[in-house]
Length: 253
Image (tube, rainbow, N blue to C red; front, side):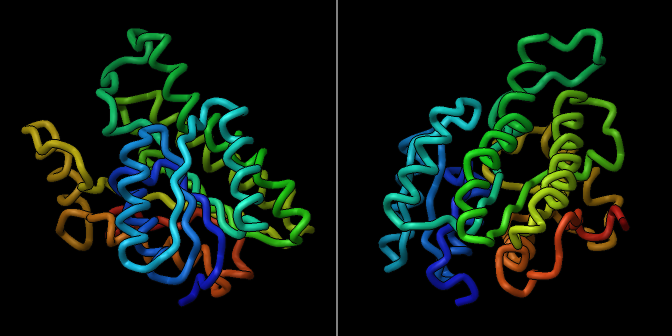
């Protein structure tokens, strides 16, 4: 019960790794707020958590729209009185087919869409939540980046760039928010199998991820949730501005 009664917002928790965060945090006693643009998926996860006798509420949220994010924060405070943890998980990766190729041929509208969700979404959620945490004089912000930040992955240049921006934003906020006892950290999972359909392309990508790891197996959402739990708990109270790599030893940072 390391998160007992901690009010926790998790963006994009209706699917994949986000759903795994929500289930794990609920098991540790947190009140889970699922911020999910896919309303039926978000409510399905919340209902599954409630059936287990735990606390969860789903709120339809578009992280690219400040009015939507601000409404999420206001309703969360109205329901629970505070926000203890913000986990910025929502991102475009496997949810939509992404351009894989040269930067000069990348469709401009796709660049804008990826940046809006993956980077602007993190900024907006932090912007709306920080005043609440400042009033409380404490809180935990966990941002999700990607191992592509280290490798400068040659394909999906917009995705890689957006995740590099998340790392930079994490470090800026850690310095700005320290006086209010707010911890801001970042995780970089590796290539993780979640809910995607396993095509030949997916199989090859996952195998490439396995081949360079110390632990030669597919990464699952359950491999990641423990680190997120640590960063959300009081065990990490003296850790901020850090980038934690969780991908089986392929990247040693």
